[in-house]
Image 1 (cartoon, one colour):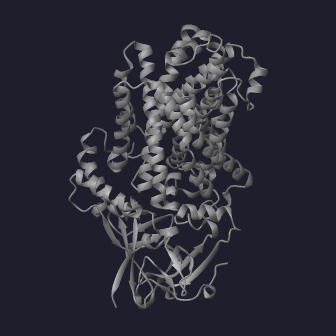
Image 2 (cartoon, rainbow over the protein chains, first blue to last red):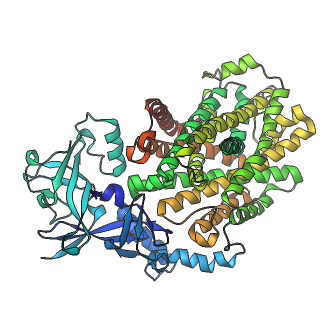
Image 3 (cartoon, one colour):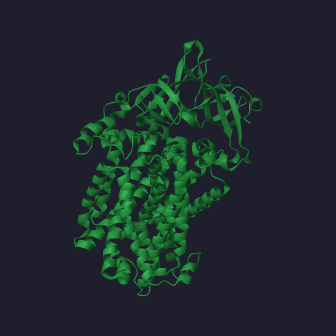
Length: 126
Length: 109
Length: 405
């Protein structure tokens, strides 16, 4: 069982869903602190805002500006409870359906509105 | 007993001071273990690895420089402390404080 | 038996992939202005690239993750932005130059102004990426790229002075135009050691499903492929040294480089030059655009693969599509391809530290590589290359200003 190293093994790790499809990376980990208790690894955050925040305030402002330009109103960030983790290895497997994640919105939007409108975008393996 | 939420990135790289207020290093790693008690399956942080990089400490705030320095130089006073969770005061997450004095803290091999 | 076929294919891929607009332009300029003298820079560049490629290949085969994956995983998002931005800026400059190379080749062939060819080139390239798989892209362009052997043929027909060429493989100082000499040295290194090459190679190792069993294939592919490829670049330098230098022709247009093949090989030489320029630059365009999309997708955790239909990796497919079309625009509006090439080569040389130094950390990580971590000779080589990259970073801007001609 052994120790889980949060910086080395968890944050920035590749995430895969139930179907072993890549669904992003762990962009942030939220810990719950309670007096007299060890900190609990609570939530996995996937999304551009979390990434931008890690870089700095200026990056966050830039990120917000760019998204305002594109007129994004819906949430693009996913928060997944850490207990959805099924397996930790080279990748971290989550017990979720990638299609339901808010952070996969751009992927879905591009797939339906752009890719599938262009011939050759879908079908059997290349 | 208020529950506060803190982001991991806000803890990594933070300067840690000991009970006397002396700077002892920066948080390099949080080590967690799964706790199976009461049928739960939560990962709980058991301890903090705090690294002191000697003269390189000023620039060793990020993962990359820390790893680079560790790889190249063993002899620049690099030291690591393993501080158990109950010896770390995170009431101000931006200013973590160890609850013991530096020489009382467990060192890593 | 199958292993040997893989090895042969890998070597061919590297040969075909080595020569492209940057190598052709910088080697030709080097030969035209300094004869054989800069050959040692090509030797240095080729050896450095071979070492870097072997390492990123080994990294992927053993850890089952690409170099781009590991830049994010091991160093965090904040650090990752450094190589991401550096590689993107520099690679964009290079791929614009490659489209320039294709456009010039078509201009020479048809007489139609190069500006008209930029967007059609991008569209055809996009189509190949959209419909083709990794094998087609990698091996197709590599096989066709073998037409670059015409430079070796041309060089041999010009009867180079072998002892002088041999001596030129060792470093030497210039007797005239010092700033220009070192400027060209830096550009040649930038053309030889391009981050997109070893990033693409690392991603390719995962696309081709390499494992620990492929470490031998990796060594041979990275080693021999680049040796042969570097040989072609040296052949280009030699032809320029023997054709352009005696006539004191300084290269300021691509058409002049055609002379280095037209002189020994006549009409056929011109045809081979056009084909080589067209095919190698086109192949490089696809490779660079893919390398950039790989870097973005892997760093951000998207689904990616040239073997997947675009609807399965929409963000990845959209990325390379946008990039290739974007790269055509500067050429379409008439920016000078040769000037762009020269600038992009020096910029590449200057960008090397952010992709070379992290490799040093990763290649010594026992968790990633187990027993396949670098031994001391590999580490020594990598440290030398890292120091070289820092020298290039410092020298690039001054030399561009003093020797940029």
